[in-house]
Structure formats: C-alpha cells, structure tokens
Image 1 (spheres, one colour):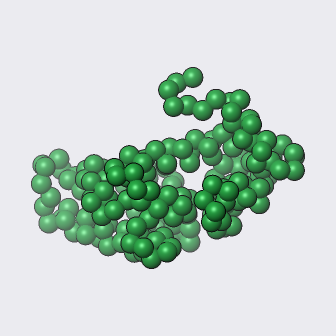
Image 2 (cartoon, rainbow, N blue to C red):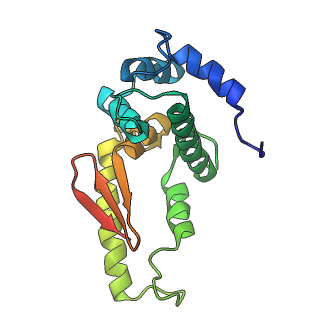
Length: 180
C-alpha cells in the first residue's frame, strides 16, 4: 500500500457503517446520512444522487463496495487539491489562494511565451467571468468564500467527458462549459 492510500479493511468498516440496512450496497439516502454526519449540514439530495451516478457502474442506483472505494478516492483527491490551495488552513480558499491556484495551472499562456497576449487575455477574461458566476452560484452562504462543503457540492455538479482528443466539461444542467 502506497503512502496516503486507505486500506481495504478500513474502507470495509466505513462501508458497513454507511450501509445502514446491511444490503451490501449504499443507497443515496444512506450516503446522504453519512455525508451529513461530518458537517452537520446535509448535502443536497441531487448532489448525492449525482455522486452515486458517477460511480454506479452496474446501473443499480446504489454503489457496491468497489464503487464506494472509487467514490472515496475521488472525494479524497478533491479534498487533497482543496487543502493544497488552502494555505492558511482556514477551511476556505480566499482570493489570494485562488489566484495562486489559477497561476499554478498555467493554462492561459498557451504558446509558452511566459506572457499573455491579447487573444490569451480574452480567453482568461472569459474564463474568470464564467468562474465568477460559478463561484457565486456555489457560495451558498454568500460569505465570499467557498468552504469544503460548498466545494464538494460544486465539484460534484460537473461532468467531465474525455475523448481521444478533447476534454469537455458540462455542468449539472448539461450546458457545455469548456473544451480543453
């Protein structure tokens, strides 16, 4: 087992606790109850259904242990990304931390010149404008920051479609957002 990886034995314990009815599969209601316990604020039921749908490989509307492991890894990876940008460990990403996050992606200097020309600036401006709209949508409490709970809701509402040549990002309303 590599460093930072969670053991199957531990995940089996967690799985059994979340699988309240002992059916061997976790329903959206069971998952919602488990996710609510950590923050005292419930996840949106639609978000939970989408999380189940993302990992429900057998189309049972539930997740079995292997699907649960995939969901666990997905959430853990996004939490690690969040923590890496939350430098002050406040539980939210402020505008300076967000700026550093965008800079670290380096995606607007498409020609690798270490400068941004007007065409790249326009793309950046469009991107920032769209993300600002998105940010406002997921800043549920209007605090001006997105905490871990709000980030999980935001991330779970996007679908990533990868083809051989392109990456397409759609929001939960199936509206096209971006092609990379």
